[in-house]
Length: 184
Image (cartoon, rainbow, N blue to C red; front, top):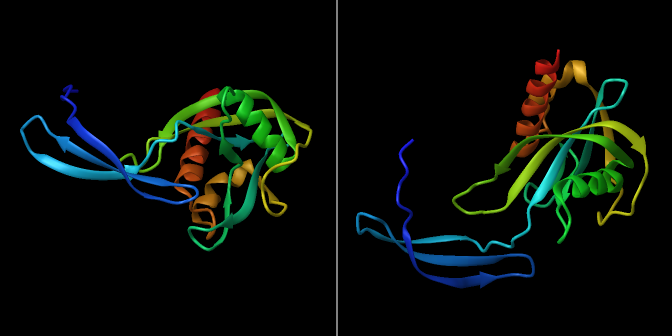
């Protein structure tokens, strides 16, 4: 692959802010002299994790929780932000305990992904979680999450399920299935 010269950032300025988000405007000059203004979510410096938990009996554990963006309940894998000073693996185990009441002794990193890199810089580490054990922590969800057991043998059927549509969960499922098939 050809290594391209990055555009020069002339300036950065916050142009909108809410309680949760800041929109940043970037004035860029590309190597061919073209100038453009790009907007993005201002980087927070916090990344996230998503885990594909697989039980000893061969079930996937998913959660159904309310998503304000789609204004409905969505089915996906446990996920959450990495706290300051926390390693991705520590965040993964903590989030599993908070969201599904299970810890994991084995975490397999599958891939680091970025959602909409034109607008966001945060990265999410996708992991396979196995050797689960019962342990709960208090989470920050406003209501208890519904935990769904889904047979691993029927995992590909999730792709056609109406409320399993989050791109990161789909990617995590595909990466986990690929990894598990390579083990056989």
